[in-house]
Figure 1: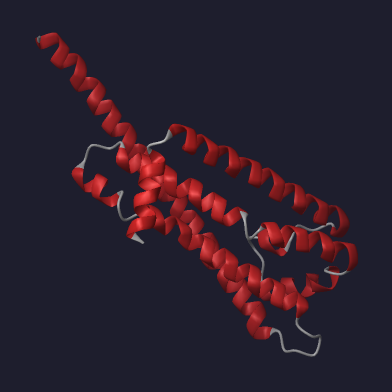
Figure 2 (figure 1 turned 135 degrees about the horizontal axis):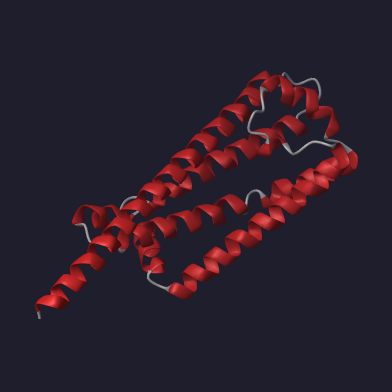
Length: 195
């Protein structure tokens, strides 16, 4: 874990690597939505994965739609949905490392060596959601689906909770970094005026 954090902090020092990660993240997001749009054009509904209000009963009601061309479209989406969460988490982790690193506070800089790797927590929940949803679709018809359906919805809620926490933390780190920059910009003119 320390090695991963160390790599994330080092990556945050390279502007060209950071820009590559930003470009890859937004390209991946656009591609993921294009895949979802194909599915939605066939079924009239978004995929399970992007329905934030999905419940076990609504999942089971929609399940019959996942056949034929719709199933093919969903499988393309699902395959890429194992790539995108990692790419997005990498973007968040490197952003956190950058915001922590540029803040002069010793406490905040210490966090830079511990915090960024936790951006990948939501990726794990996303993968568990994906596996659960694919299991629901491909389990034999006679299989009791209750446990797997509940697991899929549970992992979706954990994924959404970590996404909210991630966004809140990102905003907090931006505010801290902006505050540090503002303090430095006020101190610099004062020092210049004294010399």
